[in-house]
Amino acid sequence: MSRSPDPRSYDLDELRRRVLAEEGGGTVDDSIPQLASADPDLCGIAIVTPEGDIRSSASADVAFSIQSAVKPFLFALALMDTDGEALGRIGIEPTGEAFDAIKLESGTGRPPNPMVNAGALLTAALVDGDDPEARSERILRGLSAFAGRRLEVDEDIARNEHLLGDRNHALAHLMRAEDTLQISADDAVEVYARACAVLVDVEALAIMGATLACGGINPVTGERVVSDVVARDVVSVMATCGVYDGSGRWMRSVGVPAKSSVSGAIVLCVPHRLGAAVVSPPLDEQGTSVRGSRVSGILSEDLDLHVFGRHRDA
Ligand code: GLN
Image (cartoon, rainbow, N blue to C red):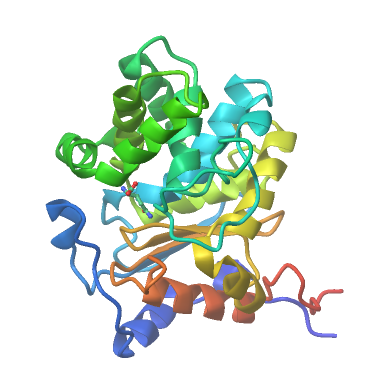
């Protein structure tokens, strides 16, 4: 019986050339000038195995803001800092709506799940810290442990996200009105905006995904970043809610827990198999990278990653 191919011998540059040659379509996000000016032909791919082996394509070291790909990690940090109490404060059901829909769970006033903006505004606010500065520093340290290197915030992006994020301000005020958010609306938006503005490259993001795939242990540094229960909870919610109103289709076709973002990055997380990340700025209507989806689908097929697939190894 044939065995699943080894990700360590997979030719990511060949895959990158292949998708760059296709006419993918999509539009680059224009919510802030720094995102609008992204190179539409940027494409980087990286894979990290549980043994800590890293494989990457050309452009794997190009920096971009993490944007919504930070949401699983904010959820993880909130679960850790609240000893799991965050689970009672946020729903975990998919919404079938856009990531920035101005809507809370009916009856409870909680955010519907941690992968949409309302949820991430709350998870960011649940991370330890007495003020926005301390909370942001704690988030940066936590994200850095996931990535295995010291990450930094792009201050101009953070400022613009904070200034121009009207829907996020609206969501934070709505959560104040429902008594779900315990810090000020402006502080919550500031902390979340700074988290979205953290700079990564696909290699760092793939290591972050691999840390979740390895039950919370960073496979490159060996550090335990979060507990295995927290990692499992986060990956479960990525599987059901990570691609917003495209989550059902994604799970059927790609079959890998993932989180997309408006910078065109996607982080993938296959428990015990690998973490991966891809970036390509043009987005589809759900705000997911067009080429990123394509790369994810091909990787899933070629490396036998679909979590409900009939694995060649079995
Ligand atoms: N900065 C964006 C926002 O909160 C992140 C959204 C995303 O990547 N989908 O609006």
